[in-house]
Length: 560
Picture 1 (cartoon, rainbow, N blue to C red):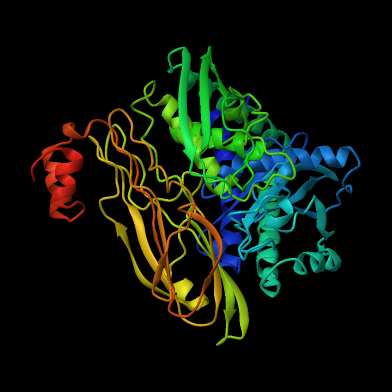
Picture 2 (picture 1 turned 180 degrees about the horizontal axis):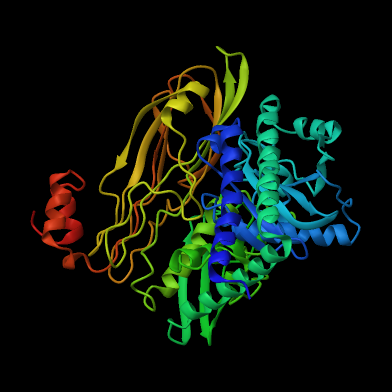
């Protein structure tokens, strides 16, 4: 039996390996979405079945389940002879959503890690590439009806063979994406991060021994499962229902329903999405790996004490939602699955469990990544560009305090790139960038505020595309709290206002110099009845200008 101190040290060491991979990836990447926004993740996965061993603390939680699923699929395809056998220093590339992924822009690398001539584990990472081809710059097609319209789909292939980049495969990739000359920076950064992981993991194994570390990994997985089961037992036995809505699929202007029933039986939870909407025409379908990962990350929000490990997922049983838009099959388009649908799934989990766990579950967060892509030609620099903007929103209020303002999305830790970096890289000017005061849902503890920004195109011509959500419905308030303010997108073309028909989804909107895009992201839902909010907190919000007097009267029912 491994002693507790050694176990804790090895656990921290595995975490540090992943953290250093994350850091190396971001520092070396070219694209602001990785280098500044940290839209990436790195992890260690078991050699036999791809089970998660460790993931970087600052990696996107939504990639926890998908990278495990993707690595497992790669291992199975190698065993079946569908993919070439690996050699030392090989790196596979894959972005196929139907093989354990998310959307096409999330490109995964996987590197076999060898000890004594045998694969000991896999090192893998995912990075969001600014473009992988398709109908629109940035890949976020709001009205795609087939996977081919969303971009280049890569099955697992060895992009690096014994440490050398395969120029022919790379040429195929570059021939199908925009701003291809800039991708080598991200590719080399992604590969270098895995090389850093190899060096750090070798050092850990050399220090403690392969058998001791393997024993620790087994013990950590078992402990994570036991800890998750102990938390599940805090939930009274029975069924719990939560419902969340996607505004539309971008093609048919009607809401999609996520209808979830959670059943606690003993020390396990069963998640049943079978009453959800059928597959949709537009890109808001979710592949199975993303649906599973969305459930896992929601439970991580509720029980953050449980370490990130495959063991933490073992007591969570998700019934495959066949026949719904949460189990997308080829060629259903899926560009909105990871960035948007995943957050609605998490919202449904929160809505189902808030009454059972009122001290742990929050009201709904903003729940949108605010995907805004702008592609065009910069005449001053003589080159094409693809700008990708993500944005924060309000978190839901909770039993203890108000929701966080301008927090990252539910699915990760990615933050909006600094305005200064965006203005330096692209021909745009941010006319304003501020908190969206008053957007938090009223409650005993109100929701946090969203973001309000406006971007002007300075030169050249460009096309804007949006895949966002919560434009029709604001984030849900709970236990008597009010909903947060919905997402708002406005485009000013030659002085004329244009509002997308689907509110926060549209593509290929032409922009000329002087045209502007304004986005107001959602506020979080309120927690508890507004009339129970402490008067001192209401007065403080009023003093700081967070709400107007009229909003205070309307939302909180008091005379300021």
